[in-house]
Length: 302
Image 1 (spheres, one colour):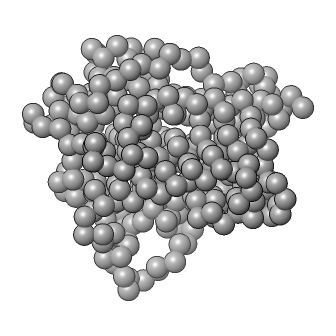
Image 2: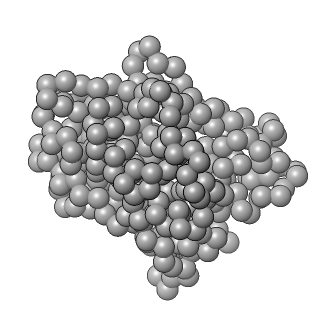
């Protein structure tokens, strides 16, 4: 399997680990109509490689974990945006809500986001504070994930506030949301044990509410540009990032070798809800990508 960077993910040749610019539709805009055939939105055919949990090869710490922080967030943005279409369409439904395929997509994208939380957080805690968190603080002293534009439309879903989420058909969705909550809390505690986010440490600083400027700062930090995007381009960007992640994991393992040490995030002592993610990140992402592509193709062919 080749990554977008042109490297075979055979576990021998090191992937270049260069974050790429992500193009996303402006918040609230639909995908641009494309003259291309609907089949151009199909997810890429790929054979998911297996990867070692503990990497053997020494890594270039700063390059690898900066790449993982950016790439993991970009994939999360893509998954949130895919969820937005379903949430917007059923925002006020009082009945059964989304259909079976739409619920499958929501559950798969949430699990994909949980996988990206784990992937991004494999940075050793000391390096996170010395490098990544320091960079975010330079972007803005109160830099916060609450500024993510694509998360805002799906926030109600993660909080169980959609009017149809209590319906029996949403049981699997509820389980995915619960897994995500456990994963998010675990990783936040792992990276920031004192519980003080940059936003909390900057309490009282001007501009606590989320403004358009803050959303732009957030996009800028994660190399995200807002412009019209077709669904075919959207799917291609998701596919290419999954291929690059596969190349990274195959070569470096989930928990890389940093100066002869590994830094596990989820262990045998962690909540059992998270443990399947450790060896299954790529399959979780592949399932989400295929549902994102397939559901849109089904709509286009109606």
